Length: 191
Image (tube, rainbow, N blue to C red; front, side):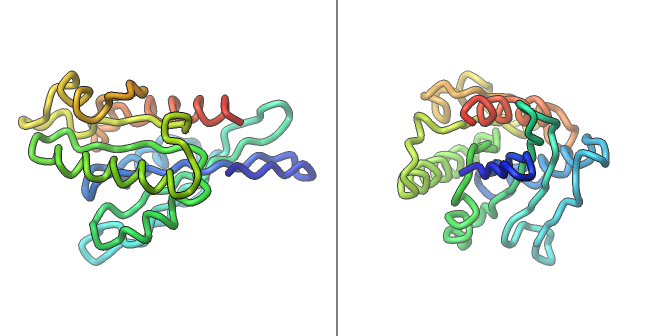
């Protein structure tokens, strides 16, 4: 839930990048970090394993200007995708104001995407949030790979709710900023 600090004239909101392991969540934050001017971002904090897989979460605070005289600060998080970190995902998702679901577009990852999406919906429900009313954006990452499913097929399986979705190639910075802009609009509109 967003924090509005009237005395400091700041609004703090939390956006979580969610999805299966190795789908590109951390890469999204790395691209965003590189894309923003230094005065609008802090350091990207990552807690990862020796093999550079996210262990707890990645965190990137960004400042996005003002809305009605309040400075808007977004706190971007990723969750670890590996099955063993289920409770960590629940903890990081707590208090989120919006979610970007990063799906791996490869055909052999469809089941992982569906399982992760079901878990997300379940976790939001347990936190008293209705998924259908929650700021939510999909990103179909790795669209450049030869076994990537076409967007209409991904839509049929992963996006029956017709949420905003963006094809992406995060390692090349394609679709990353567009995805971020879409979730920011939804979160700000809700605030």
